[in-house]
Amino acid sequence: MQKKLLSLAIASVLSTGFIASSSVLAEEKAQTAPPPSTQAAPETAQTVESKSGFNIVYQSDKKAVDKEYLPFGDVNVLAKNIMRFIIDNAKVKKPTVTTIFPVFEKELAGGLEKKLFIEVAANTADTGVTTGTVHSPVVEAEITKKEGTLNWKGLAGTFDFAQDSTEINTDLKAKGLVLTKGKDKLTVSHLDFKGVVNNQFVPLEGVLDFPSVTFKAQKDDINFALLGTKATATRSKASSGVTLTDSNFHIDSASLSSEGDTFSLETLNVTTANKDNKETIDTLVTLALKKLVLPKELMEGDDRTVSYHNNISVKNIDAAALLDIQNTLTELEKQNIASNMLGFALFGKLMELAPQLLAKSPEIAISNIALTTPKGNLVGDIQLAVDGSKPIDLKTPEPFIQALTGNAHITIDKTLLTLIISQGIYEDMKDEAADAKAQADLRKQAEQAAQQQIQGLVAQNLFTKQGNAYVLKAKLAQRKLMLNGKEMPLPF
Image 1 (spheres, one colour):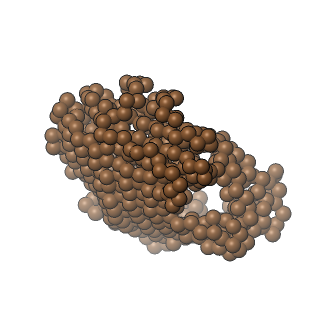
Image 2: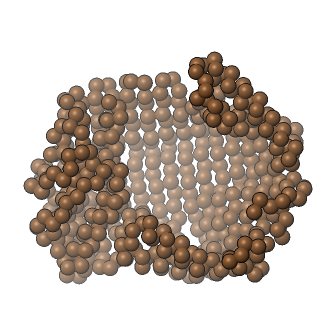
Image 3: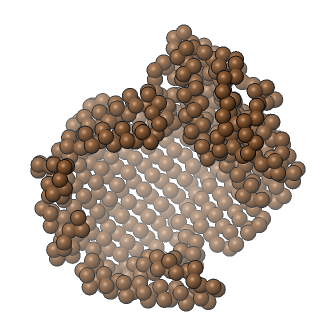
């Protein structure tokens, strides 16, 4: 039952998720979009498919012109199809109304699909500016054969885009959701998104605020909570004309407990910052994960709390080449090319610009690596670069390898290295253990095997032992790899 309850919740959240990409705040209101529908489902509620998923009805100039069915997993396809329909009609200035009806198993939702729907209405003014609204009414209904309740608090949004623009201004407010069945309960707080997305529904700029989602199930004593999720992205123009996006993704806390085992996280923070060097661009990504409590399956003992931090920097990216890639992407988006074909086209462009990119001596580094655990710690730095002053011919690998330089310095405590290797061995063999005693014996065997593997790594000079830790030092230059002071054959 918990899975069915979650499926209804996920579908409702996904239904709002695509609108977080398609809703919009208009700064220029040349013409008002059609008003949202009333509480009752529109007369266009035609059945396309009776199985779980989305039934979508498209209206152009007040006439139903098409309908389709998509499974719940195809939310992104749904959003793209609706946007393409709106854009095509905007070119001939025809108003549109698209209505999405989530359909659920009758055992779960009964007649809910007759009440729950999302309506997207759009109108195009003589100026070429298209404005629209997104609306879903408040729904309170009994579900799961009247054993549960749904309280959908509604959805409202507006959107706006200029003629021939690939950018959509967005303002969305999903007001929350509560699902109950007996003592099981799922609560989703309001979700607000205000910003800009492209017509492929990739967020470009804005703020997403998602305060909380909680789920409690009596069976298996399941408790889940995700609190304080917020994402921000801000764009700016570099001196070369390249669009730079600085961003931050943050979670206050997350936890999942079941049958006495717990997985929890105190804080997750990811930031991206760019630096304009006129001819080149640098990007720095910082990841900080604090007080992650691992489940017992991954780490034994009462204290299973780990923390992690690292910086990933990409430097000396040719600004002119990056601008060329961005302009190509914009032109491809205007053509509404499928995502897979878009990837092929961008890869071709990247290969075309590769010599120009490599000439600026690009560098990638993972620095300030710090993993802290009760079983020991790991610290390190890794850096790889290309010497752009050397002639590089991508048709043959030898000149490229000759231009590569790199450094790595990793230190890991003995107990942690043993745990990592033994856990991998145990995961491969755990299906052979029939009971708790067999599992305990298997863990001991895995630990012994891990210690033997570590001895083999030291014998191969992949690690050197320093006190209670193992160290790896590597340097790559002029097609020579030095590992812990000894030259090693290149693996490529």
